[in-house]
Image 1: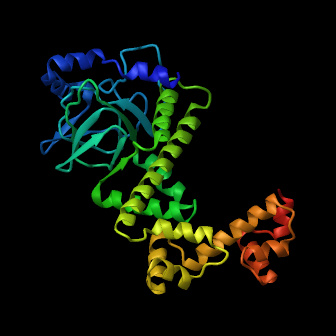
Image 2: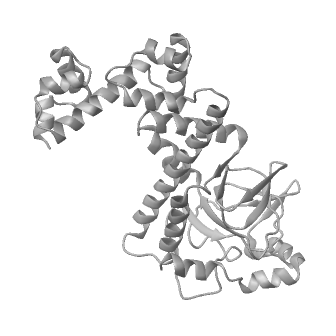
Image 3: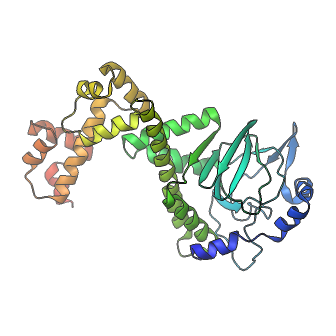
Length: 346
């Protein structure tokens, strides 16, 4: 399945959507039926899905009336489409839900807050959040990704925590914000690559090819990376308008100038006291300024060892080490071998 075929699949209304369009009240009957597997607690419906799979997503959120495709069964994640014209009661569930407005718009009620979303917007809701999406129209297409908690944690937080100072910082921010505000909202309308990724992962899910589970996992990793970058860009823009420096700008400056910058010089450049900047960096990344600079220098040295034939001494100097013995000590501690052995291993 290609992206054009995917659009031809999800844009036409389904038989159930046409039924709800004629009489929206009929959609509420679904939640009282055995097939919904819902229960009601304190005027809120509970949608229990202990393990997300192709089978557990259910018929209510089906993408099309076609029956000639067999979605991939991937442990921990499933995909469907918001049923247009449907009246969904306030509900919660024990999995992470990501809503992506593929076309048109929608209005969500999340923890008693009204959230207006337009094409390109993405909302990730934590487990237990009481929410609903108000009835959508014929031109409104909302795609849903349902993830159990373990899948989300492994994909969104743990993998990025070891990817460098900026991803580490952003994953910490997002995970903390998820704990407090219970949902995250992203605006990806200026990132066409994100739309491409969502189309690709749905195509793979609906028409699984060889190694489909690995492909879906890889696409979702890219989806999360794009969301992290989107968040970073929006926050930097917001802080820039307020004439303040957002931490990711400082971390990027440290990466770009790791061979020369010092804590005092960096703090002065961005208008901080050195002690305040040091505390902020450690709180955000879990590492000290000095450790991040060392990581950047050694990473640059490793790249030069593999990609050039320059002498080790010259590479050490280029990476900010005037003492070659000290460079060797740091390199061995980081990579478990000498610079020459590292180069030979390439």
